Image (cartoon, rainbow, N blue to C red; front, side, top):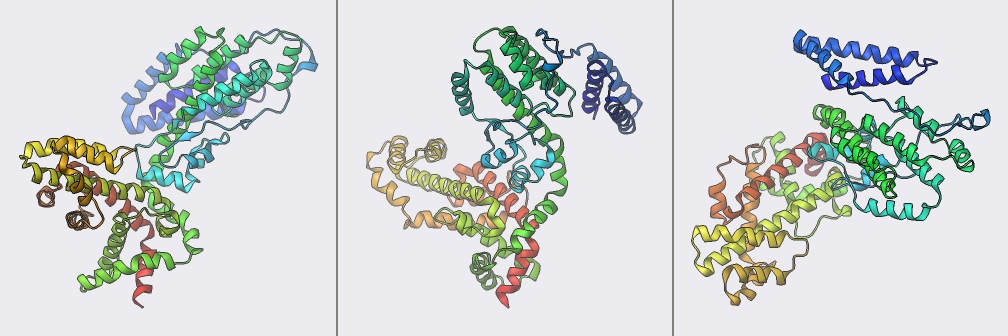
Length: 502
């Protein structure tokens, strides 16, 4: 709240110094009222000491303000060269393609225009879903965009006007129309104004780049200050344009991440279940329940046979958990066309769980094989596990590489056929370990204490103690995902269970 107060004060000072007063009274009154309200809230929450501290910091940071001014490019002094009355409020080109594992394509939908607001993120059910389930997720810039920037600049390097238009379009994505600094950009980068300066040989590109950097300096995060300062020193360099484009794209990610952290995440923590339930309701109503019903049918039959006296509420949730683990332990990857509609947003995440389960089971069964064959003690056994696990987790893993790794850690060249047989779909050792792990996971769901759970002894019995920490993490992710999905769709799942047994 104090930080917001200081940011508003900075905006207030900018408006005071940069605007002429004509038509800007609304700006002044609005900002002043927001400052007063924030200071009242700070006083209520933290007392007079907190409010006094905020005011003292305000006086201190005011000494650091440096407001950007229009460039000193000579005016052509005529009404004919007045900037166009129409300013660009949307970027002319696509913004940075972002990486937001595992749904970068959805982030792009937000970034194609200047719509980096919290509401824009909340309108995208997929993005919101990822933010709910992965609190640490942040937007990053795709390094391949730098190559695209190089290609663009190479293509238009002899046309300064196009470069200025592109730079202006990119700046508009981080300086919204409501920001008074945007007026400076609109004026200095107006198409007619640039064209006129170019025709009269007075287009001062370094001066315009300094303006851009000063505007960036006024709005960027502190971690970008050093980069901005370096670019200011290099503003006459041939390569500085490329670096400025890269910096602007970093700011685009900063803006979105700040808004996600400041507004979206806190809101979702309180309203996640209700929000997603509302977003998914229309999709569920329009879908045939046949696939989802079939998915739960086998689980319902098993639970009914094994626990016939379960209360109705407990029965429905147990069926859901068993059905969810059916997907996680499926021998083939769950594809889009096979995933139940209630888990449509999590198809990629379920595939990741499937892969991790197979990797951990393979690690466990191979470590048990090596220990039994080589008669290793517990210390030697534990030392083998990380090497086998790393091999299985690598992106280019093959059966031959797995065999090579096992031969290396065991020192026995005769392990080839044993390794292949142990990892085959008919391996009794693998199937026994898989069944044991599944029972352990189903028993742990809902307990919320995976790292301190006493099930390490059970993992030892299953020969999986070598990957104990990994399995604790796995159980946690399965529990969080399944519990959230259950809360969102509990009415839907209850409806399906009634349908199955009627």
